[in-house]
Length: 294
Image 1 (tube, helix red, strand yellow):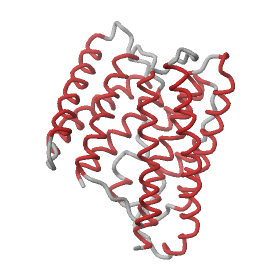
Image 2 (cartoon, rainbow, N blue to C red; image 1 turned 90 degrees about the vertical axis):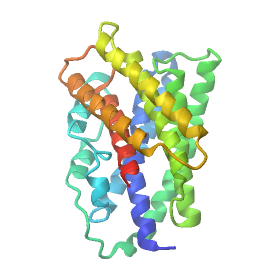
Image 3 (cartoon, rainbow, N blue to C red; image 1 turned 60 degrees about the horizontal axis):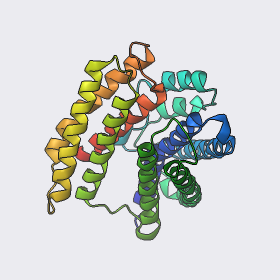
Image 4 (cartoon, one colour; image 1 turned 180 degrees about the vertical axis):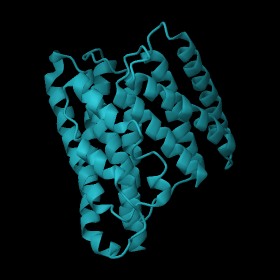
């Protein structure tokens, strides 16, 4: 095992997915009614725990995160701080924005003494696996209750399936790091996975826009249809992927999401989309673009 690569891959994984998981937990909490206060409390627990995990990751990441990741817009964007402030105001759910400020100050390429962080990174991976096992179980319980009409939440069942898939991918990658020392992934599987995620983002955006936002709804429908075709082609390919087509479409979707995040933060778009959700899906598009470029 190359220790330096193991440490860098682990930290780059957590600095992206740790934030994604804490925000999933926040979105779950924000979607419950008073009838499910126990599930709200469980979601709050995982929001806080993944926030702690992300904080530990950032403190360990100085000088280690690669320039490509730092500059990709997958960690934070120009909208993240304001999105957190507005979302905390709208939901009453506390968000530690000091983590975001520290992420904005991260620099790269001073990897001296990197191997000395191996114990801390191994402990971080163990913590992440423990938290993911619990959060995945919670998401599965919520989904089962929704599908059996035992629970109401403002989140779509498809959204729960969507965030469950992402959590399982994160867990799979950590397990690879612990068993192989690196993340081994098929580009076809990665591309099909993220094409599906992008398609579902377009569907969620369409469903959360106010019915009067007809032009934006039309654009979201178009993106959903285009990604459905990309996903079908990707799944039917032997070993080939549709990299160029996925890249072109995702850059267009990234621009659409960035305009949406700005419009939502500036109260120029009618919707029931939390500002942090708009920023969240933008970061995931940036993550996919960075993978395709590499």
